[in-house]
Length: 432
Image (cartoon, rainbow, N blue to C red; front, side, top):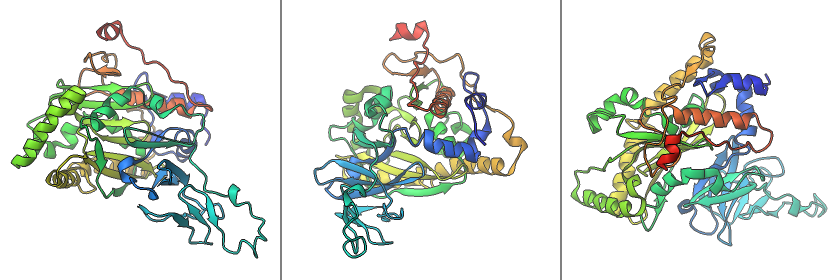
């Protein structure tokens, strides 16, 4: 089925907070997303610390397309479709490593870390030396740029610079990555697992759904705190579709004295560098599918694998100057809480999976509009130093409405979608 602009707008009534569940199950919409969203938006590829040396590589996806990310001989980062120009076979089947050349295991065509075709078996006696090797290199990703070590790519040569795409979301990325003078790094190993649901459910939750925590994560929250006070936090949404939800003054607490001493010092340094951001706890999503935790120990990508399937790739990050015992503890606790079998993560996965089953098997359940009306007309400036359209509670659905507004703009635009200015009240402008 082909959806025109009118039908899409009727399905995404973000102004009134009503969204059709067809967005999460329809095969035609999924295919259109691959072209209109994942074919144009800036997508996370890797972090600098994951490919520090020349010829280091990491394989990932941009939407449904496999991509090879390399550290080229000149130190720059290259990104290419991980597909041989001969028959489309992957030229690199490893997850990461270091290699000067990537050889297709089907017919033996080989490419270097610049994507150049360097070897074709029987070039002389099968191709009569007539094959143009310069025209058969790996297809490059149109643009590759980085911010604070986070490397992004886009297939759209007309896309704005990454720094403009991120917009004021950079404020929160800075809080995650610039609280330490030495910066951050990604620890080895990516935890990957599959959820039978739609990728947008995960992205929108990380964009601003603190509301689910008191019910979904009730058992795990009771182990960490007495309750969640929605007034002790807020939300921020941005014209680019990014979103954040946060709580204030959430300090790390450890039984180990050396760990506690490290984090106490870390907070002192962080307060001087990034202010209150060092003590925020919550979630964020960079549109469309790059998410993480504001405490800086976890980020992930929601890789779509169909209208009712996506992979979660979870990465663990630490400060570069963290001692070994801190690194081990961060990686242990991150996996224990947010890994594939984490005590918090499994709650989310069960919800998403059950929603996916209902939409896949049901008919009537696809017809009702889902409600995203929490906090409508109650978004204002609640913090003089924080950017974005702000909600005064940790609970609210402003970032989700912003996410689907931006989704609609991509899906109804044949060119790079315009960037509207989110309306703010007089109170907001005066507060700034």
